Amino acid sequence: MSKCCCGNCTLEVFENSDKCILHCEKYDWYEEYESKNPKYFDNTCPKNNWNLSKEKINNFWKIFNNSLKENIEKNVLECTYTDMVFPALGNANYPKVRITEMKFLSLKNCIFLDAIDLSFFLSAKNLEMEYCIFNEDVKVKEVIHKEKFLFQNNLVLKNITFDNIQFEGTSSFMKSTFKNELTFQNLRFDDLALFNNCQIENLFFRNIFFRKESNFLDMTLLKVGSRETARIIKDSFEKQNNIIEANKFYALEMKEREKELEEDIKEGKNFFEWLVFKIHGLSSNHSQDWLLALFWIISFTLLSVTIEKIFSSHIGLSDKCVVSFLIFSMIVISNIYLANSKKVYYLIFIAIYFFIYLIFTEDFYLKCFSKTLNPFSLMQANDPINGIELLYKIIIAYLIYQLIISIRQNTRRK
Image (cartoon, rainbow, N blue to C red):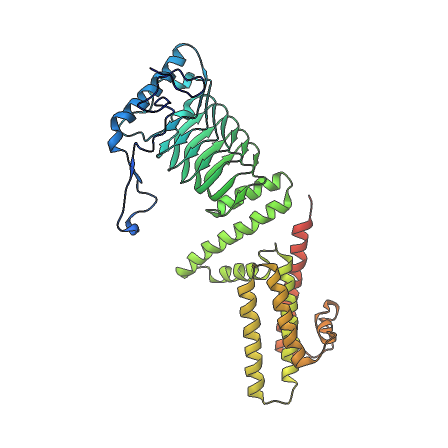
């Protein structure tokens, strides 16, 4: 019989392939389930039917088990497996070998075609998994991993969960891509935890402890699964004095808190706390966006002067109220809709507001605007003031405060 064409593999070729059973392609080992009603076919359902390959699956795991067993018996305790294609586990058992004796186990360029539990592999003292592809869900649970765990440059297409694990050595997930949920719960990292250059669709931390440094630099994260997740990442950047990145995750932490308060609102609780959070988010993205605060300042000042000119005009009182209400509603609703959107929209709408301002004030040089906005002339003891002016002064003072805090947050150093 011919030998496998992969590297140093000494196994015989499998069936009509030029590779052994460990390395050969296995896309004909299963067939995809078909669902006439996609509503009942979600990510929790198995997508592949491996029943036609039960014997092949059992044979695969038996040979893999024997390979590990032989290496351990020969005292070859540092093993590297490359280019393997893993099928489903089926009714087979994970290799029954004393893998805890393995000093170093490496899996490189491997493909996992079905859902996999990696807990067995983490029983090795050091585990390295690089350039692997996981087509279905991955889980790791109830393991105390003794030394290094390197999960780098991998692609995980479905959900991956680490549950009830203690990493005693360095853990690295650098440059890996997670296309769905990446969940860590009930974990303890006793040494370095590295997430640099990861691309993560949705990251979820729950009950996580970092004994030493964790690093999330250059991580691309589309969604945080909880407020605790954002808080942990924020704290990591703060410990490294990376204030700018910490501020970004502070804003995400506040947004998650806002979601929690929205759930409380449905139960009739914490209305005023929710209102404060909402205003804080809309006015400056929780003190992170100074351009948004400046946009509100300019908008409200243009609005205030415009309404003042409308009420000093000679049209009827009812017309004054209607026109003022329409302009006020348009500006406020537009600003709420534009909050945290693309910055170019701020410029476009400021131009629109300025055009409306010119129609009613004919103040092309913004003299009235400058006089109204001037913070050193806002509070004059002898000037008469009505309720609307007082409301404007309170709002503009708050917005100027948010502008200052936002600029400071984005430029401060410890």
